[in-house]
Image 1 (cartoon, one colour):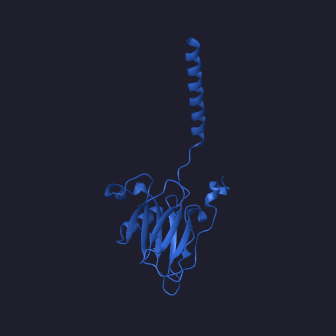
Image 2 (cartoon, one colour; image 1 turned 180 degrees about the horizontal axis):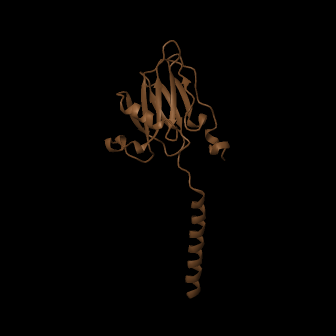
Image 3 (cartoon, one colour; image 1 turned 120 degrees about the vertical axis):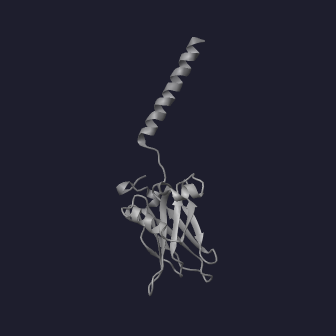
Length: 171
């Protein structure tokens, strides 16, 4: 089911972070569909380190060739440290109008890492000093079949049935 603007219903939630546990653990859910191709900047309940997590297209191996080719970058998670106000996390997808500028910012930084995007459902990144900050990243650009794909599948199935009937009739 699609909502207005073609956004899948499973991504209709609003980005947010839960409260921190006594150990400082927390979970954030970030949806690039908050604003079409980027999430709200959500306040993290504890301090974080600044930097970037770059998601590589699903199915690609994490290696220097795939990581250096920005065509393979599907999403970027941005961690911003603020003074006097809470730190934030925000997800940007390749359809975001400022994505190419963000790519250049990441390339000029030393604080970034790569992870593979999940083929379906959220991509989970676990970070933090104690590995207790969980970020579930929901990207609406997960591949869905084009409508014409179903037409071709139907036509192919019809052709197979037709050929099988013809073969049976000849026997």
